[in-house]
Image (cartoon, rainbow, N blue to C red; front, side, top):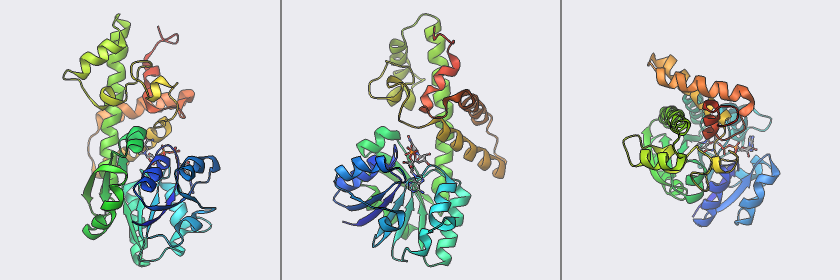
Length: 299
Ligand code: NAD
């Protein structure tokens, strides 16, 4: 069992840290937002007063922050950069979804200073984080992957070695672009069915058992009241924020630009999330993009 410093206890990081405690690891946890610490400490983690305190003596450091600038700030450019105090024996696993280029650069800076930094973004949503069934997409050397795997198995069920540093983030950008396309498409179909008199639960079940089936229909139905325990049945609170999906679609745009890969569907999905965000919905779960299709009175 390992001593783990865990930084970022939001919608995803909180349940991930709790699963590490359940797996028998010693977890020292930190979040800038004090309230986020409570459930993790209740589960048996130790509260750290700063990121530096969380990583002190840790064999493994895991970060789960919103975006690249937060990760860069934490490790290299902030007031107390963790790269200044972490030792070369410690494996740093960043599970945030960030630019592949930033992940690669941080690993290079780390290597230059005798440190080990790998990218390991996740898929599976808050439900997967709570159930410990996340998919991890790891970018790093084979040896680093082998060292990270038993730790990641405490939080996930499918642990993939995507390739060298940054490869995990490339896989994640591809996956989330596809997810955005599937979610907007699912909303489009559901809204059309309902506007033509169908019950959203009946239509959802038909499509789930038919060729239109996808992850949104299976475990994350965007239509309120169709599925229990998902953000759409909780006023789109919790889950995966529109702001974060918008960020991820920006990461896909960057990759497309750098590699001249055409992404007309991804661009369209980004335009839809961009409009939805501009209407003040950035803090809602991303399945709320259904609202964009609905009439003002939801009729
Ligand atoms: P969140 O906003 O709920 O949590 C982020 C947490 O990081 C917050 O609690 C915030 O206070 C904390 N934080 C920010 N800067 C910090 C710092 N310097 N030190 C300590 N704590 C700091 O976000 P989330 O939904 O948990 O997502 C985290 C990452 O995982 C994002 O990159 C997101 O794109 C990705 N992701 C999210 C989901 C999902 O379904 N929510 C799924 C897969 C991947």
